[in-house]
Structure formats: structure tokens, C-alpha cells
Length: 48
Image (cartoon, rainbow, N blue to C red; front, side):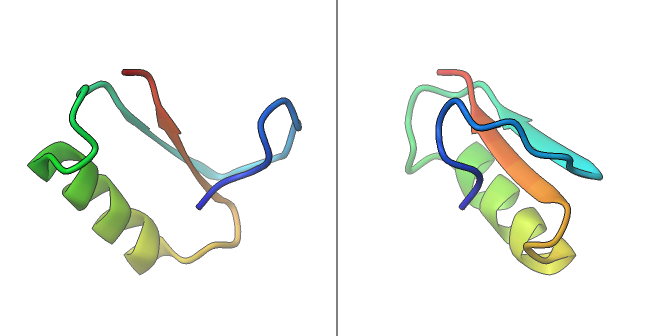
């Protein structure tokens, strides 16, 4: 989910995670939140 790398898009909600394990609860909660908010205007960024 999210935009192509390097592409600038306008979003209303930005969900940022900073946990190194993509299978972590942090990433799971971020994915569920993004799912609940819907794809329009929502982006997810993973810093670790």
C-alpha cells in the first residue's frame, strides 16, 4: 500500500512505522488502520 517510491502525492493521513520487523504488531496495527481509513488520502511509510 502507498505511492510509488519517489512519487509525491497529497494525503490526508500519513501512518509512519519505525519498527525493523515487518511482521511486528506495530506494522500489523498500521496496516489495519490504513485498511480502516481506506486507500483515498492514506499513505504508509516504514522508516526501519
